[in-house]
Length: 169
Image 1 (cartoon, one colour):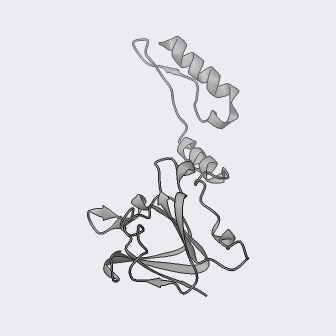
Image 2: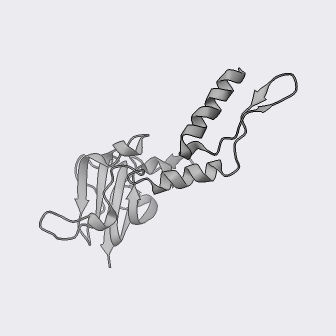
Image 3: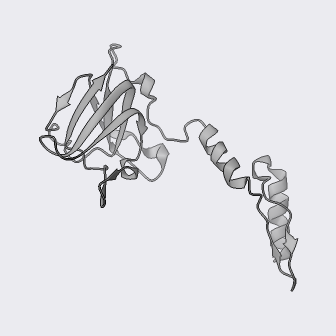
């Protein structure tokens, strides 16, 4: 096994983004271990945040506009995926500022799994038709995986939106 550890160290030394791995250390009994710098998780997190597009293909909130240039308050998407690059795709429902839909259009109730809210806007959602059930406010930003946002103790917001109100300042 020492040759495998040595090759891992050599690979890590050739690529600067994995330099947080130190040389293999020998333990008693001839065993060797790789030692990771305590800064490695921090460096990995910073690298993922700095990479453009690391949060998927969702549009930037400031770019939510219709083709004629008028403002869009929010967009709901019916596709989500464990991979952020595959989120904010599929059918989309655009909401203009001031949109108040206690009942979503046919085919959209409990369908949205990604959403984007425009800059200086806020989207309020309900889990039941007629603005009933649980409620949540989404401020300006991209939300590529609504399953990451809790709806009570046992649920999340993916495929759970039945009513919306969108306002912009």
